[in-house]
Each structure stands twice: as structure tokens, then as C-alpha cells.
Image (tube, rainbow, N blue to C red; front, side, top):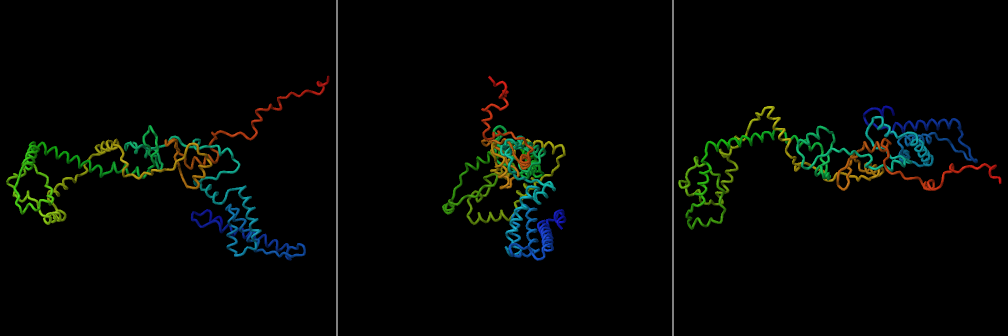
Length: 424
């Protein structure tokens, strides 16, 4: 049952199989003691009977505590049995089993993690003073992949192709190296796809078609600008008389005039009916607004149809267009940026770094010096440093009273004078 619970991928638990095995061993010892001492143990005229069930309880608590490296199994046993008559043997057995098991092998959960080769952060062992001399600057990665605030889309494309990091550092510039924040890889991919996507290409084709139509209209009607300017001057300097009854509406705002048509397609201002130049009442203005909302203007409909273009670009033209788009500067306005990524200073000790990573559950942290990015440290580098794969580069402290070894001469420097030579 224990082998089945620890090997199958389904998380069915390994505590209860170990608990049952410990109870079975304890019961075996209890039955053996009951067979050897059927009348109990005699001590100072007192008979202590043998209870095999008590041995089973102690064995279950001891084995489960040794396997999991925890003392809380004693409390679990007390809650399961509902009595504390065996509290003394249970506590002694659990403490001794933990002490022996921790000195021999890791716990069950740590062993499973190592067997499956899962990333984890080992604990700092006691007595290894050389690990406390390691700093973050000794284990960090100095070649950090980053993007700047004034980079182009080509830089984003190169960074996404060369690395597989989940987050990238955002710097002010390559010269200052000031850390501004961090951006997730998904956000950068969204920016790049938005810049090189089909909607962006259709917008480019629409703008090009509009510019081409405007150029053709200017070529076919060269006097359109002069005519429109002349009409604007006529409208500007025209004066019309208003009756006293109509002057009461002078406080109401006049509706905005429609854009002027080209001079060749437009009638004269003098031939226009006089009510066009007169201000309308608020009722008429609201009616026109509702009419514009629910009715379709044929001129506007024609303009909207003109902007629907087909994507008829060839592969070569698309490649050239993408090359031009990659040279544009990145706009980070619509991008989610983490303005406060976790940072460490370069002189942070390994012990403090291990504590921070363990308590906060970090997977990486940036190393800065006065706001400048100088490196990054992750769980991989921290694990290698704890396991002893990184050589210590810090200053080693001399042991106590070592200064006297330098001041006093070594005993081997004294020459031994034979006793025979000491005679006068």
C-alpha cells in the first residue's frame, strides 16, 4: 500500500500507509513482549501488565514521525485515540525517531522531490560556516536579458527568439541601466503581434488608398483649392438682415455647417434659400440629431465603403512592410508593467537570500546597485550555492586567537640543545 501510494501519479497520500506499517511493527513488538512476559513486568512488588495496543500506538507515532521528520504526529495520535495515557512513551519515541532519521536521510517528501528531479530549495545545513560568506554578487548571473524604454520592435523580436524567460527587465536606457520594472513575456508577444498583425496591415493599406485617392483628385481638379477658398471668403463676408422676431433666437447656438464640397459640384451661395443660413430652433436641432442617429447618410455610407480594402499584398511586399514596422519604436502605453519587481543589493548574504526566497516564494530576483541593474539570481543559482557547487569568493574570517599564531614563533623554530653540551 505504501509503494502504491508513493509511486502512482494520483495524489492519494503516503502518511496513512506509513502510519499503519508503524502500528503493525508496534503491535508485533507488543505481542512479543506479551508472549515473553505473560504475567506482566514485576517491579518492587508492582505488576505492570503488557498492553500490545499501547506498543502499536507508540510504533505508529514513531515511524510516521521519522518518515515525515515532524513531531506533530504525536498530537495526531492523541487525537485519534482520544486519550493521553501513553503520552510519555509516545513523545520519547517520536523525538528519538526524528533525531535518528534526520541524521540518516531526508524526509519522505524531500526524497520524492529528489527522485522526480523537481526544482526545490534545500535547507541550509548547520555547521557549514563557509556558506554564510557567500554573497549574491558571487552567484548571480551578470549577462541579463533586458529591454529598454526606447527600444524598437526588432529588439523585442530578437529577445523573444533568443530567450525563454517568463519576465524581462525594463530599463531606462542601455547607458544608465536604471531598472524601471519588469514585463511578462506574454505582454511582449501581444505587442509584437499587434504591430505585425493583419489589422495593422489593413490600416496601412487603407491609409495608402486614401492618400492615393486624394492625390488623384488633386490632379484631376487643380482649381478646387482656389474655388473652396473663394467660397469661404464669400461666406465669411456675407451679411444678411434678421427680423426682430427671429432675433430672439440669437442666444441659441447655431448648428455646425457641413463640409464644403468642391467648387465645381457646389451651387452658388446667393442661389441658396435664405433659411439655410438662419439659426434653427432647439426642437429642429434635436430632430436633426435623431435623424442623424437612426438614418444613414448616403455620403457617409459611400465613404465607409471606400475604406474597405482588400489585402492584396504579395509575400515580398509583406516582408518589406514587416521590416519597416520592426524599425518603429515600441509603445508601452497599453502594456502591463510591474513597476516594483523584487530587488536585492549585491552584498546580500546567502542566508538572507535563502530566507527571502523561502518566505515569499520567489523564483527570481534582480540584483541592483544604486538603482542600476547588475544581475539576476534565481532558484537554480541559489540551489547550486547551497549545495556547494559555487566556490566561496567572500572574505574568510580567521578563527579565534589566530593572531597569536602569527606573533609567536613556531615551536619547530627552537633548536634543541643536547644535555651534554650544557655542561660547563
